[in-house]
Length: 437
Image (tube, rainbow, N blue to C red; front, top):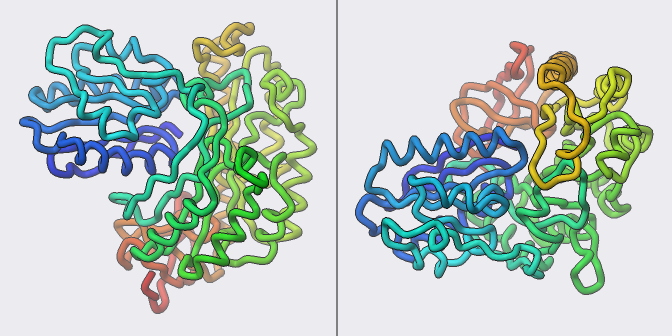
């Protein structure tokens, strides 16, 4: 969630993206709007940072990258936006390297970039960040491609109505609001028509999709509609979901539709009931375990990933061990481990904190458990045949999102391959005949 990706320079506009898949999608909208506003014609060009606020480390990385960009591009206009800019606009506006700070709603509009101020303005003029909670709708922004990516991302939802005690994201994204189903389908059609074999649906709290739309359709209905109306989509994938909100249509589609990829990334956060309650999560550990068991019966071989936070305030050794054990009890394969990072303004930041060395040690133990589970998963695929979407440099992902080295194929191409083994990080694949995406 805190990964950094840098898009190639496009006519003097360089977009640097931190964080989630939703940010990646929005960066394409931002690039188009900035070009429409004429930023590409500026002497020295423009560098736009689309930031993440999930952890303090993500914010630190963004500031470090901004300072480096100014050193490398002294004449460029530097614009900062995204969740960190929305939640901490004054801190970015106070940076001498920054020319303009835009909120998460403003970043998607060409007029925001046309208002780029002259050099030397004060911090107040530099920041154009409105109240994100005043935003009631999310429009379907159409893009033709996701630059530098073999798979395409499509936004279906934004914001979150829940208030987990550790999470700053609702203050960066606002309340939950859904993209109308028709707009989602049209975006998927456009990207599939442009040659993308795999589409990833993304949002902040994706399983809350539809609650604010007429008739309150759920995520499962959206998925079924896409697969029915866009037969050109070869692979449809879901980003992170909240298992407690998985609806019957979604479960039915997982069981019956081979084009929906057998990989779910779950927002678990902890394996201990008391910590889950203190986080204000809406599920308990047994519900997570049952969900994984039930879905495996519907779709044998499905792969589960999960987010887990190590060292949440008040977490005892026994509570942490419950999180360790849930890796095996849920059969998790792709683990994202986050050392707890107190975010100013959240209730968890005011709770009794653990020592940082304890937090780091627990995160390291969780990563060891995750690595062991991943190696078991790699070993289980030896001798199987897999369909692999080529990403770059001879690497790709299976339908279960497992990394594979196949040494051939163009990005976006789907290659059938036999798995001969693994190197502890990726599968070793022997390609058969490739088929165009």
